[in-house]
Image 1 (cartoon, helix red, strand yellow):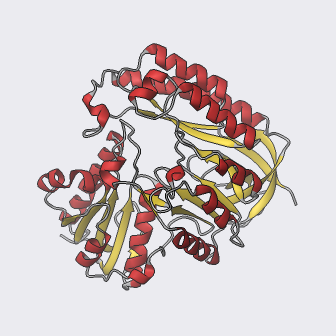
Image 2 (cartoon, one colour; image 1 turned 60 degrees about the vertical axis):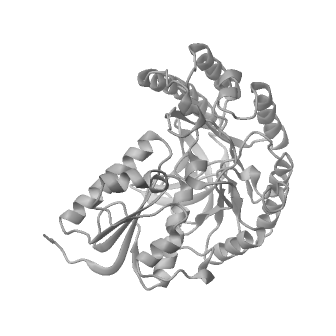
Image 3 (cartoon, one colour; image 1 turned 135 degrees about the vertical axis):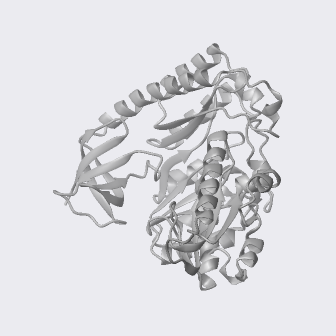
Length: 437
């Protein structure tokens, strides 16, 4: 029984998972708006008559969140709070056959490459002239830009190639056009994303072309920050570092998931590298770009991981002092190479090991932050929460890294603007400062 009036031709897109999914949702929303749909991008049920859930299927926790969200939405449909529920994205790509048998209330299921079919189902035309255009869901001063889809890497634990397919680079001229349009619309920071940035160009240009792409981005007037996410360590094109060092608007920041340091684990994970090569690469990055912030992610509890492997990781994290670091516990994913291995590390041990790594990292982050006290940094302000304006330095990516907090009672800044901030005090993951007039 309906409890409220629903707006016809209004779609609420719910996005789960990573920034690559977010870009897909923004493209969908741009197409819908061009077809005269009203569009929301909210986690809760709104007055929209149609829900589209863009799901994540990466690891067990993400899959469960996606399923829970689908169930919540079909329950709302049963109560008359929404008329149609459609599911798209990675979970739907990977498990569509099973899901549509178990959750029959969903009106239709779509995979990661089914945008034209989804639009047709919604009675919207797929407008080819809009390729590259999106309805941004991020604050207007920054945007994610996907430079490639899919992945060719053979990592044993990863299901991305199953859900996203082989690596496909977006042609350079298309990317530059998209970036210029974003800047024209007020974007100051572009965050380059792909499952593997460093593979860019191999499929269409027959060479790794990330360095050249960065040079072209850097030449765009008005683009203040360019940030790199998800670089792969094996075969890393070192010429990228030279461009990063030379160009002032390329952030001294690199997200490079290293996953482990034990040679036994790296080999089983099929990472194509070794402990020695990993350490050499980290040293090369830091020597070529002094002051760079390296962000990495690690996996605890991979099949066969011993206490010795774990302690080797702990020792390496202590020695490496990564500026930014996150940890996942291993998720045993069907159809991956590692699924044939016995998932022999108990869940509580996985979590204990992850906690131990993060305990070390908290101390590292705290020590690095304390060294910032008294320094002045350039900050891009993202939002205001409570009594604070909250921003980031070039060493911090949105949502995952450190924040700069400025007392809103004593300082005023405009959201989306840069300001010089003197750091007054430090926490484990935040810095507190004052704006320099």
